[in-house]
Amino acid sequence: MKVYRLSTAFCLFIFGKPTAMIRISKLASSIQPSATIAAGAKARELRAAGITVYDFSLGEPDFNTPQHICDAADAAIRKGQTHYTPTSGTAEARKAVAQWYGRYHGLDVGPENVILSNGAKQSIHNTLAAIVGPGEDVIIPAPYWVSYSDLVKMTGANVVLVETTLDTGFKMTPDQLRAAITPQTRILMLNSPCNPTGTVYSRAELEALADVYLEHTDGAILSDEIYEQLIYGGAKSTCVATLRPQLKERTITVSGASKAYAMTGWRMGWAVAPAPLVKAMDTIQSQETSCPSSVSQAALIAALNGPQEPVAEMLKEFTARRELVLNRLKTIPGVRPAPADGAFYAFFEVSSYFGKSFGGKPVSDSLSFCAALLEQAHVNLVPGSAFGCEGFVRMSFATSQSVIETGLTQLAEWLAGGK
Ligand code: PMP
Ligand code: GLU
View 1 (spheres, rainbow, N blue to C red):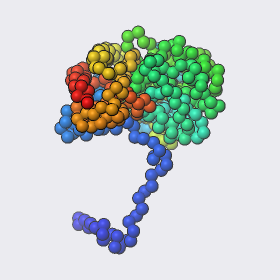
View 2 (cartoon, rainbow, N blue to C red; view 1 turned 90 degrees about the horizontal axis):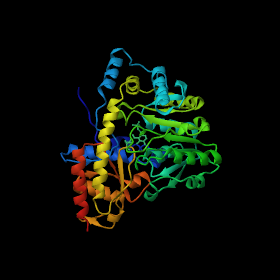
View 3 (cartoon, rainbow, N blue to C red; view 1 turned 90 degrees about the vertical axis):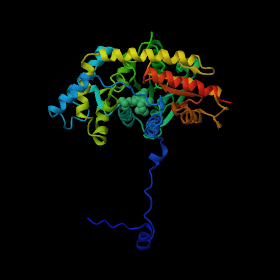
């Protein structure tokens, strides 16, 4: 077949003005790309160019999904479970989630309280879209996971940040929460264990926050508990919906299979909430994505109902990595790490290096710090500013101990070269 190509000059001559560029919506222009996803993409790009990168950017387990979960997905495909499912997920998959909450947290919920989605990220979006809109407030303690603020902005609601510091273990106090509540407050977002700080609130600390919230507003709580199975030492994760009897009707618990079961690519997340809210989220999801993947739902059932030893094994390895990271960081002058009681991140202060120059490049904030570090030492961290906390950087330790060893040696040497 002959292909005719028209030059731009010829088109201009024939058709006059070039067609106008498509205008990008206010919504798309007002939000930032996910900084963690962008950092992961940057590492991939460098690796493709043949550069060895010590990549600590993405919060993604390096383990493969346990075999019995893959086998369940394989069997589902062979049985023809390759069609649309109900919007909120199959009855069996929702039952598996509901029963898991009974076993793990003592929370009495049924399938009607569960909606599965394409990752916990979509569950957070569904929750926000079903509850808030312009003029309403969503309280978020900072540092917060990168996507929270932009997901709230996408609904038109206001982000009300509550700043916390390393000195208080990055924990919001009841007084701070009281001061942040307004008549427009519709949602409080909680995330314990926390990404990026690793902070885990005790049950008593969460009760104190819940009591203030219940007393001063009729808003809801969106509790993102996706790292609930990844906790270290004496820390214990708490399901916020179980704290007070009234909270079950006011809390949306978000979680997913990505972290504990090493299932990031399967995109399996969920929200557990009062049935009328689940129905509203179902309506949104029906227009948005029809349903989550049928094959991933079969895999999820195996993950939740099958043997839990793989989770314990991965946790054991994360525990060793955490020790390694925190011990090494403590030996680097001017670096102050947060305790990291849960999740798989070390969040540490590097502001004592701001104002210095590295390889001729001035470093003035966490963004320029991470850019210079990646370019010169090929160590990839995420700037604290992406999590609403300047002066800090985040290191994911969901990677091998040997990469951690070498990467931290590179980091220490690079820092020592600052002038
Ligand atoms: N919440 C937190 C705190 C996270 O770190 C992540 C990271 N992926 C998510 C939600 C979303 O997870 P996913 O969409 O992979 O289920
Ligand atoms: N939650 C992970 C992180 O914070 C994965 C990336 C993402 O979903 O943003 O790195």
